[in-house]
Length: 248
Image 1 (tube, one colour):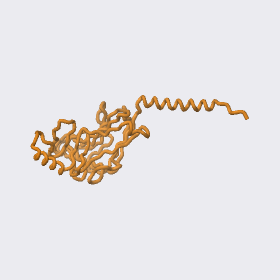
Image 2 (tube, one colour; image 1 turned 180 degrees about the vertical axis):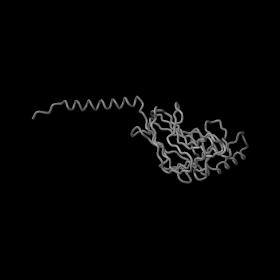
Image 3 (cartoon, helix red, strand yellow; image 1 turned 120 degrees about the vertical axis):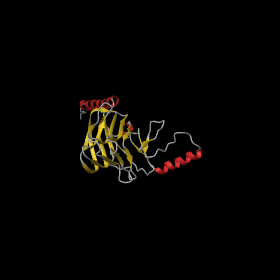
Image 4 (tube, helix red, strand yellow; image 1 turned 90 degrees about the horizontal axis):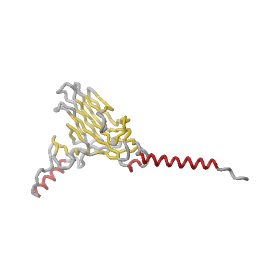
């Protein structure tokens, strides 16, 4: 697997690079584009799941789906970053340290412009892990000011889990949260470990059980509006109770 080079922040990951590095004749370029399209979806990095104020119209929680597509499909798989990751033709995203002897992982980034995230729920349709020797697997999270923290771990042995949800409360609210599936290398090398993550059954794509739901701390301006509204309501009720009953 290699990453194609591009002048934009986005990168695509696949076994064969499709982006030409130098200008080519029109006919040759057209042929390359057709070949790239035939190869199907790729992993595109530097992509985040963004929550805006409009997503929280009914309260301080909102939910969005995350997606993994097939390597032979037309849609790309958006992630933030990763090491040792590859797509399969049935919609699985693999992370493996079989030949790396280092941690391998895929990272999803969640951001909120409506206020800091105070907690999140991570839903996963399907993942399969294999821990060998002293290797292990973990779902982890971090913010821009913290290190990786486990919210699920698995040691030795093959394990498949379906429709799992994990609730996490942040010690310090943050406008950016990173979530990663990591195969972690232990002190002993040569004991290969892997993880397979799916957002949906083959061939991948959308599933209601693969989602991230965030809870935010409203911005001070929003809190001020809420407080003003409550104050007006309480004042109105007080004035109503203070009026005398009419004489009969």
